[in-house]
Length: 202
Image (cartoon, rainbow, N blue to C red; front, side):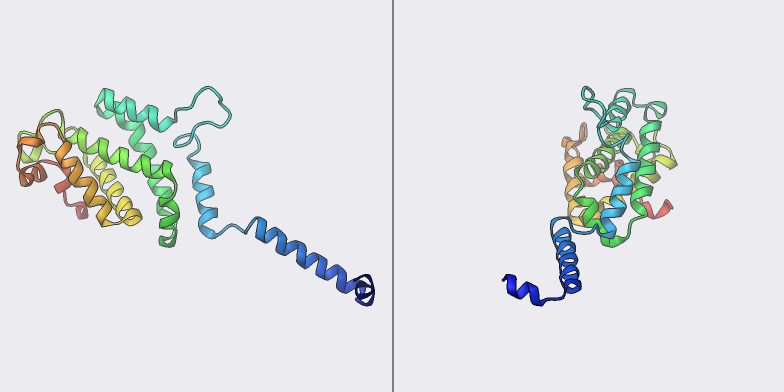
């Protein structure tokens, strides 16, 4: 082996050593893909909302969880305003990613949880503690901007997880809404924001 190495020019040995080192690094730590880079940017921008503060050893809840609970308890425009605004920013950030990165987004549990739980909450806020008394009351206190957020959530969940996922989520919720158990499906549909035509919202 030593004799073989002695016959190889030193420049060639140095070149082979460098190539070998680069290959080793690439195998141990592959270069980040475009999706990985974009996800890293979004995670950094959402670190104070969807992720626990890494500097705090005591506080394990996220800002999202606090705002979600506040919205549930207050059940009012003021109590839900900050949650809705932060979700709009989050969904806008996701919208900057290419369609080829949808599966990468879907793999982040914090993103999936935030979208599902916010959509669930908005449907319940619109419905109320009992079935709406009329079709025009199906939005509760939610305004046009809030319904637009719901529609954006719906579109993002469908683009990330597919129509079948959304349909399953919708049907499960329609059975679980207060007072819905005694109503036919078509009435639940008509009285819930599930029936709203999202094409009306930009």
